[in-house]
Amino acid sequence: MDDSHDTPAPSSPLRPGLLPRTLALCYDGCLVVLLLIIAAVLVAIPVVWISGTLPHPAAPWHRAYLLLMVTGYYAGFWLRDGQTLGLKALGIRLTRANGRPVTGPDTLIRLAAIGVLYGLPLVLAKHWEGCLGCWAALPFWLPLVLGHAWLWVDRDRATWHDRLSGTRLECLPAD
Image 1 (cartoon, rainbow, N blue to C red):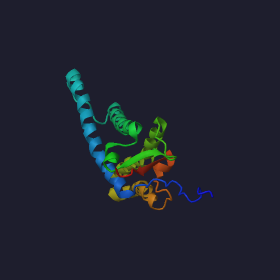
Image 2 (image 1 turned 135 degrees about the vertical axis):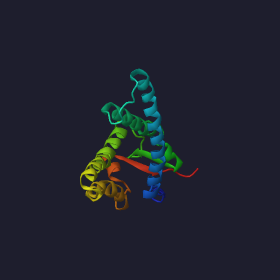
Image 3 (image 1 turned 90 degrees about the horizontal axis):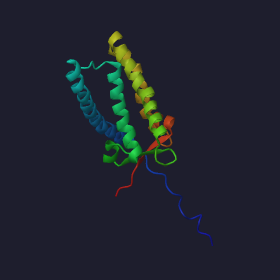
Image 4 (image 1 turned 180 degrees about the vertical axis):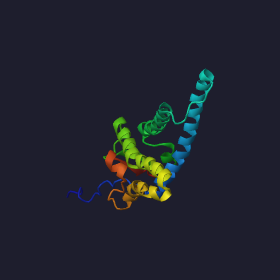
């Protein structure tokens, strides 16, 4: 008699909810702020030494440099083992939607999706808040809230940027 129909199908990995994702984001956020401070100081020292003035933080080259640092942090850790330090602390890993490790293009698409869906509206919110007051900026926060709240209705507990990038977060089994 064939028992193959009695064996359970491999279960799909558990997906983290909003709280673990937010905690990992806060953990990584603190590390990224520290990274940006160090990166800014490492640029400021030679600029001050050569020109005698501090680089302007709003200079396009300075913003691009800091954006490159943030991209490097996330892409580097995701490519290494699918875990930033925040994700590792909470036992979460980033994979492709099929469960395989992420690739370079996957990480860039994920970061671009995050930037377009959430970063761009927040930049616009900052502009409109300055022009019309804080209430005018509220609609620009909607993509951030809805994009993350989407995991409560998605069958795979995926956010908008998970879907757009073809990636997912998985809870790792306890050791």
